[in-house]
Length: 136
Image (cartoon, rainbow, N blue to C red; front, side, top):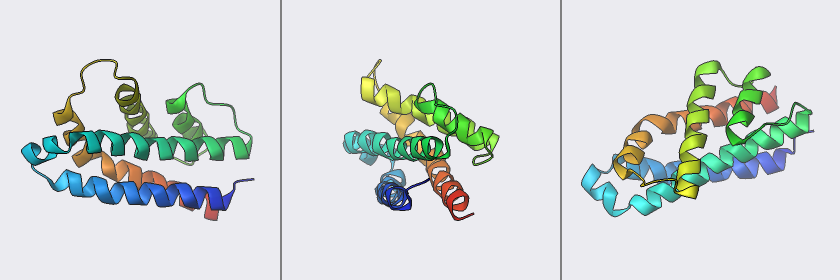
């Protein structure tokens, strides 16, 4: 059974991260680059909050175990929680999170800033989809 308190806590964190990410998104590139480390961190933890929520819902429902972080979104799609387009974008965001955490190569902070202008709606849509699922 889904732990509603646990989900509410994670979704509240996501909301807080999104508030700060919106502020960073509104900055022009030069100003954003002065706060790029904050942007990197917030993208990472906002994405991780979604990954944690996905993992909790999947495990609580007894669905198949995800193969990796991105696959958790796929499992939610398989059970009708997320639509296909949002699932693909969230999977890509999990990939960005991995690059930020593991620093596979040089981080392109301009790209991260661009992702903020496009990706925050996906994080919000994830929160809405999860809330809709658990409230029936």
